[in-house]
Length: 118
Image 1 (cartoon, rainbow, N blue to C red):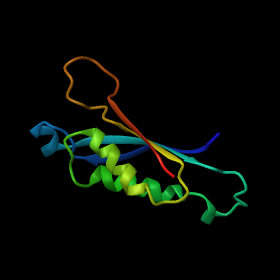
Image 2 (tube, rainbow, N blue to C red; image 1 turned 135 degrees about the vertical axis):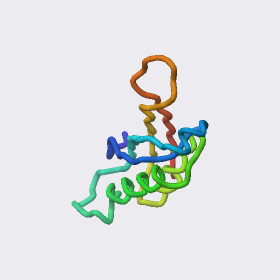
Image 3 (spheres, rainbow, N blue to C red; image 1 turned 180 degrees about the horizontal axis):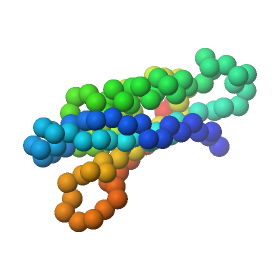
């Protein structure tokens, strides 16, 4: 069984979307990240695990960085930006777009990717 570190609700204002208005005006995006890591025998040593502050910063950098048309691409860019942070067994990224331009009432739109490592 793999242990997990979760970072929930990383927020940033980005310009991702297909519509011109989304790319011009932007909107808030939220990101949830699950890191699969073996937490056994860490010896209370940060060097032997994953520094989740680095992961959160890199995710935020992607959110506020170069615009993408698809939130699926945003999620993949976050995985790519964090793949070298430590002994990852897997990484799951969920990008939330709660203000997506949808004509009916809804709570959220989420694109979720999961990548296995090692």
